[in-house]
Amino acid sequence: MKVFCLLTAILFSQAASSQTLSSRLGKALAELEQMPMFRHAQVSMYVLDAQTGKPVFARSEKSGMVPASVQKLVTSASAYALLGPGYRFRTRFAVIPSEIAENPPLLVLEPGVDPVLGSDRFPSQPDFMDQLIKYLQIRGIKSLSGILIRDQDFDPNPIPDGWIWQDIGNYFGAGAWPLNWQENKTRVSFSTGKTVGEPARLLQPHGYERYRIIQEVKAGPAGSGDQAFVYAFPFGHTVMLKGTVPAGQQRFDVFGSIPDPARFFADSLARRAAKSGIRLGEGLYYASGQAIQPVIPVDSFAVYRSPDWEEVNNWFMKKSINLYGEAVVKAISYQAGQRAATDSGIFVIRKFWEQQGIPLASMRILDGSGLSPSNRISAEALVSVLSFARRQKWFTGFYQSLPEINGIKMKDGYITGVRTYAGYIRSQNGQDYIFAFMVNNADGSPSVIRQKMWAVLDVLK
Image 1 (cartoon, rainbow, N blue to C red):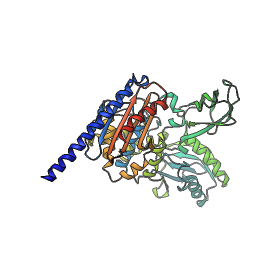
Image 2: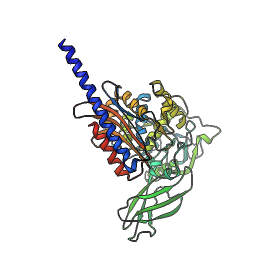
Image 3: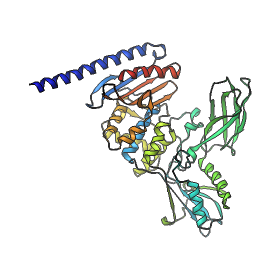
Image 4: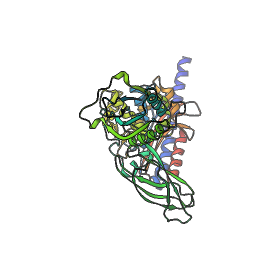
């Protein structure tokens, strides 16, 4: 009888606590929605008790919302589940001898959509170009006519549907190509005078040397930060620089995406190879455009592998690198026996989550990063993904990859008018919650919107 009474008291206490939390969250949201910047916004929130799996709070949790970068949680968990934490992207290379290729020999690259090839984020990773040059030196290669990229198994379109023109030329709009190099990102440097509105001086268009550049960047107010945009498109030949950078700068860097990473790689390799006495010709060929493919014995290929997904994912989550998400979507497609393409990868991802009980209509996504403003995910679907991840053997790595924001392990998302959060939180009394909090069409300072949303999340602490 005493045990029964004790259990009843505990359950009653938990229920009362949940009701209190629910009412406090409801009050906090009501106050938020009365603020001018949220008056015309759509607000969605869903909170789950991590131990019981029961809802603690729900507000418009089934509504499809623009997720921005919290969508990376879906991509990350999908990669863990479908590829595994130890998955590594693969790049193979070989040389077609002069009797088969043109004379001199031809370098063959078989890419694997590796998004970190040439990245400086992984200091313990062997340098790809060093390995490639050593491979050539061991075989006595002194001259190459060019590079053949075997890309026939990849969708040639690097940009997912729904990305906007203003984004794709900037570093965060770099798409996933069969061959990616140095995150398909480059740096453009400016200097500015002290007068607001005067043209900025272009110092260094690194990576854009082959392109026609239209320079319209001007000096903005001191302290205004990077308000410049790079306009470029895949395989294009013109780059337009527009916007402002702060006045009074001797050097101010802006980062853009590379319209043709394969050519960017070839130019980089030519410079590095020349230092080792190897000449690389200008030829750059794509297998997808060849009617007849040269036959190369499999054992002739050398293989280079990326760090494992768990290590790559740590950067994907903490630095929110869009390219990583787009590349892993294509890897998921290829692993499923299909062409490495965004649309087929998204199809595999959505079907997987449908099998876990998440309705297809609650996850209408077009990319792997959340950059497209056409994406829609419900707060309930996000929490379901996070709840699934919490039950998996790989959860520790997934959890540790999440940024800590406002004292909470969560992923954040932001595009114009959109601010979103989703993750895990432990309250002061030791209660674990899984949550998603999404606001669309807010109108105000992004930093103020963030602070107001954090105040609501503080109720869970």
